[in-house]
Amino acid sequence: MKLTIKKTSIMFIGHYGIAYIVKKKASAIPLWLLFTSVQLLDIIAFTLILLGIEKASYVPNDNPFFRNLLDLPYSHSLSGALIISAIVFIIFRVMGKKTWAWILGLCVLSHWVIDLIVHTPDLSIFFGSSKVGLGLWHYPILTYIIEIAFVFTGWLLLKKNIYSYVLLIVMVGAFTGMVFAEEPLIFREHFALRTSIVLIANLLFVFIAYLWDRKNKKYGTDSGYRDNRYIYKTE
Image (cartoon, rainbow, N blue to C red; front, side, top):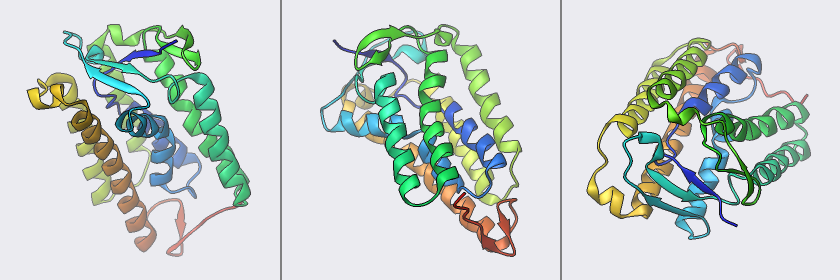
């Protein structure tokens, strides 16, 4: 049984709002790692699409949130999300970072929970079966406003440097373009190109978050940095 999900190139930034909020509470965890965790399901989905394991195609629709027809039975089922979350937990638990393991594992799972709110009933519980979704995407302007507000609120919680402003501008600009701008024909006709661009965009967000971490480590400007040393807690 197939899982069909409709999205605009699955470029959504609301998940990063969770990363900002968690960073405020768990300052020892690098922001780039939180960014990776909250968006890991999509990163895996992009990779599986490029490998031909999961599927993506463009469909015209007036609602910008329904312009992709995706078949993601592994990366975006609840069962798949739980397995991926468990793997992340085990990796960091083995590394001796018990607190990190719980936080990052839950960050991974938070992606599916947020998707449940915005999706129509097309999210699978078990690898393609028993589909659910609350359907916020039926209200595209409201969805856009909520995602922007969520990210901006989380962004305000952290100390600022040049990379924090760059990150916010790039994320909001990319999301706004994908929601309101007309997609070029070459992207609509080549799913691999579309998927690659969105994957690269998300990896760019992670990289800028890494630069934010590195600058704060150097100058000790974030609450997760003291005496110019980056604090890595194991518990």
